[in-house]
Length: 191
Image (cartoon, rainbow, N blue to C red; front, side):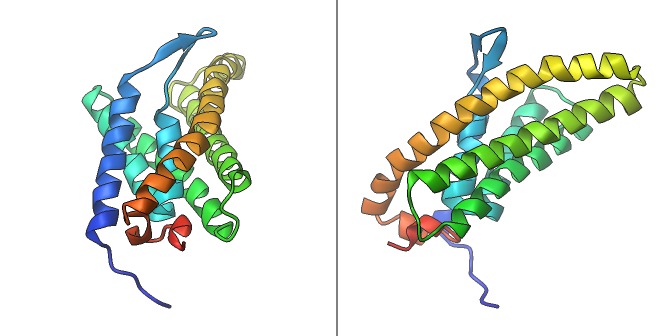
């Protein structure tokens, strides 16, 4: 098995993506009784741009730093890290598998899969906390889950629309600057 070394391009891009995730999480706007933000879209882009591990790390770090700064306890910070890592990891794995087909179809599939991974993990967290940590009855747990599912799906939909658009907008710029080819594990860099 061939091992690749981390390079300054991938580390710098991962740091920038983590910072973008953090910053974008700060900006939310109301929509249909929910607050929509594009941090999930940036998490998906991180996975598709940097690959599953580096992209997942950037997505998880940016989101976990936001939660830590917002005052969440360590358990919630770690859960956020894992769930955002998983979201970007899934997106990165799917794009990597479709590396010969660098079109919107693969990035849409990766975005939908990554976003749904996050929604599923968020619902699992809600179920575990509501039922086993707070000991609420199951009817109250289901009501809470439904109330959280709708905003989660709105955010997932926004991420699925925004992530491929952003990725396909920045890819030519990164390619022409010679950065895209330097990113470790990037399936879109083999141009």
